[in-house]
Image (cartoon, rainbow, N blue to C red; front, side):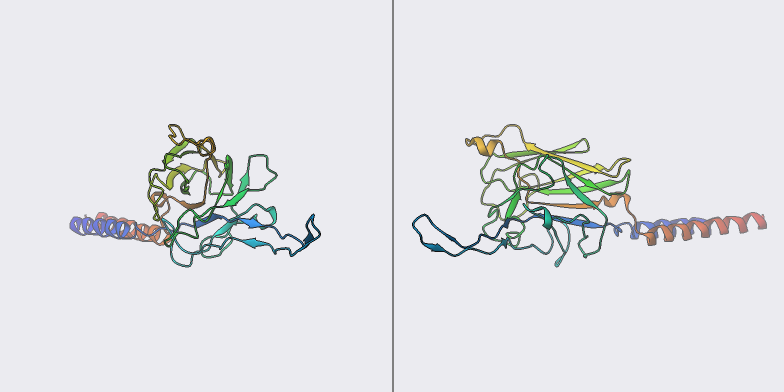
Length: 265
């Protein structure tokens, strides 16, 4: 009987480990998307008629970045308040209740500007515009006291430009050393920071120019630009319900076997 119990324990552990790589974690994607407002027709100082231009947007990116899958949906951060969602969707297009607040005193407006971050490659659309010196932002409506992985994409235009990001007390720094990159490289054009959402269920993001910048342009030294972000619960703490079910069934079988053994002794 003892050998049966050991076997059940081994089976339960195997089932738990075998499902440990699958996590029920929501992925939220956010892309800076440049908005150009419409310009009406007008007459120039010489009396010439000039046709106006309609409003325009950078191409909305779809798909994966460091994490994710083809066809994933992205929420858009823009320079106009009306286009910024108050309830973010996950990568599959489902409502999450998560919001992103601008804490820079800009009345909720996220200023974004166009920038061809990648000249070629599959991530060209992802890095096509950025938030200029976003300073402090905050994700709200997260699960309290939960670890989250935050991927922050930053494509500096000059070698040596650095950016430091602080998320709920956890920091990371990018430093751009190769302006020809058209792929995503950790700590050069993106950071991964794992931080706890705390009792309030929030992640506060402070982005600032990093130390040690060796670029000559003052503007480059003083910029902290964010192209996009991905937010997901850290897989180390988010097992799927099926994982818990398998573990409970295994433990229940062990308990039942122990009970039967005690009756036969």
